Image 1 (tube, rainbow, N blue to C red):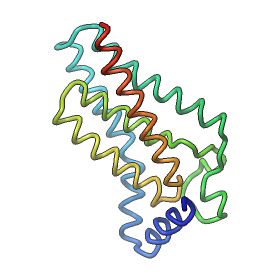
Image 2: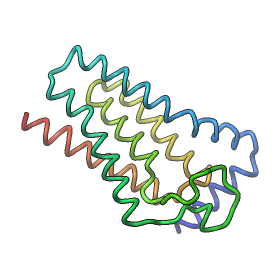
Image 3: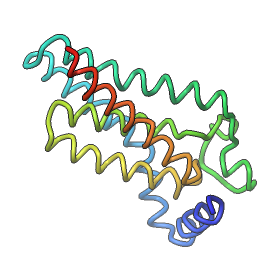
Image 4: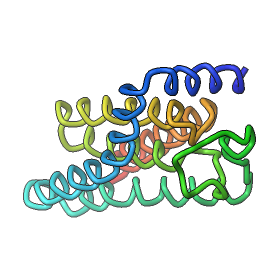
Length: 168
């Protein structure tokens, strides 16, 4: 099922060249957008929140990214463009695919933003969902890679911002 969904997304992308160019542009731009949003909102939070909440804001995404990287190394699933030997625009063909680091990072930042500001967090969560789709359409990840990255970040956020915040 994962392979069929991937092939449908990837096939659609390359039969629609303008769509593909837009997706590749977004895929390259969004990591910078997420970093800018995270730093800007963190700066705001530093002046308006407690030290404990600021530490959670920073630490939950860092822990999520670390867990994602460790999981990738342990599972070591090849990327779909490598597996299917298809043209891809990624120099990272040899890097593992599961879970998607882009998606887990974007989702972790979105939940961090939700922790500080609901309206901003919802907007950033929408960008994370677009990032998720871009990673499949661009041929970098299987749908299960993206879903795993999203679920990992969501679970880490729920644990961090609900449970740990309640202890502080």
